[in-house]
Image (cartoon, rainbow, N blue to C red):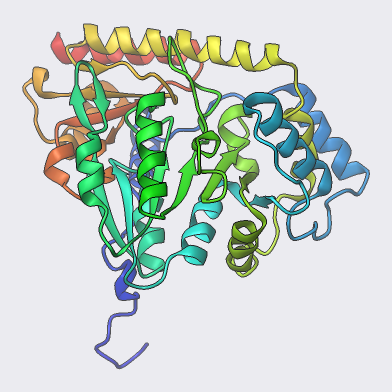
Length: 393
């Protein structure tokens, strides 16, 4: 034990305790509740992709340290995916870097590109690792809040412009957006691109839900807009698209200079990871278009099942245009404190959800909102809906 009165935890991380996901998942186990809190599927992805991982293990591919940038097969598959889907051309040897999931990609990019005192503008509410990684880099986070409007959450472009100062280093953009399900439009992305070019800003774009967009929404990579290819670090992930979140295979695509900078930080985090799984993800990215269409259609049906059930249970529902999360407003149920509501919900209804306030700097702005995940089996969602309807008798 140290005799010093100095706190053990670095002051940059002092505000971050155990994540809400760990707390709520533990609560789900303790109460036997249906866990619609943490965003992981309850079924595995395609059998052929699993078998590709088994083959890699048996063939001795990836059982030792893979190359630092990632195995060539995966880097080539990522470059082909970007070209095929978005007509974005990347050199797999110099402009692609494989990471331990998107979370490491975010951490490495921020550690590499942010100096102490730099401001990072991020869309609030934001995935909880954003705030922690900005803090670890010594940066100052500047939230721009997506606000509820016409049954969705929208970006105020004037507020975004006003948030940029002479100290702003980069914009951290997430679309499709977790937790709100917002997918930024072409007009919004055009304005973001123009702002970044005008103010000479770097941009990190978290696009892990790129294949989960619904209705009329379309995912448009920011790197494809004028002036953005040379200033954007784009982040992707296999976990959400192929339902193998435990494999932790993510990546970045960018210019050689930015990829080299991010790799300089990444090599001192995990160094390398997920060797055999990298070969399997290379095969997954080459699955036919029918896989991606079927995956999206399945999630759309589940979205509509859960969203409809939540509305019948008395919630105000913000039907998402992307991701696999539904944000709700609990005020029609006579509630206003999302934390208290989520901590009581397992005993009241046998379901676990996440209070959106954890994703806000301005906790009061997120207080009445609660997030549910629909990446679960249909029967599980049907049972959850049945339980939730007990809230209104």
